[in-house]
Amino acid sequence: MEVSNPDLGYSSRYLDFGEGFYLTTNEEQAIQFSHKVIIREAKRGNKIGTATVSSYEFDLLLAKSSLKMLDFELPSEEWFNFVIDNRRGVVQSFIYDIIYGPVANDDVYQVIGLFEDGILSKENAITALKVKQLFNQYTLKTNAALGLLKFISSKTY
Image 1 (tube, rainbow, N blue to C red):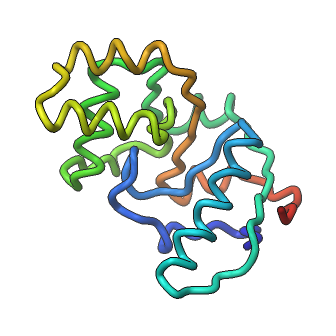
Image 2 (image 1 turned 180 degrees about the vertical axis):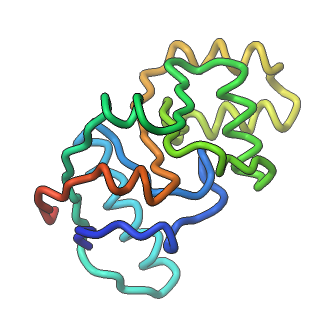
Image 3 (image 1 turned 135 degrees about the horizontal axis):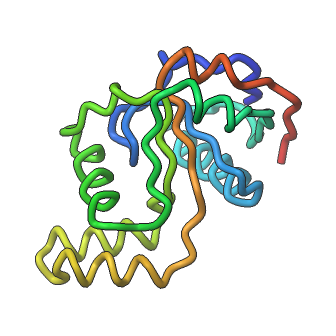
């Protein structure tokens, strides 16, 4: 559905960077995710609408200068630990307004699963992730961060 006024109250806790409003600069990734949500909800017996991607303007320079931001430029041991902890509900990442970093997509979940099963060491898992093309995500965690968003439009797919 169109999200012209994001609300942190609808956030899920067990995501890569914890609760928040998730954005990406990669349109194809956003389209694919909107389809995944529709399919997932249909399997649960819920009809929630049509696959829709909302677009925004965001002043990243202002955000970096005025808000507390955690930035994971590349997959690293710190990023890996942070994602695993958030997915387990361990990290309380509310001390940040914005978190930026690679998306833990389906390939990443497989690598994390191999790590959790003891098949890959943490070092081998991180090395495997560095060779994959990972897209980015921004997680806006506070109303101050949401206040820097300007809704532009939405498109249904």
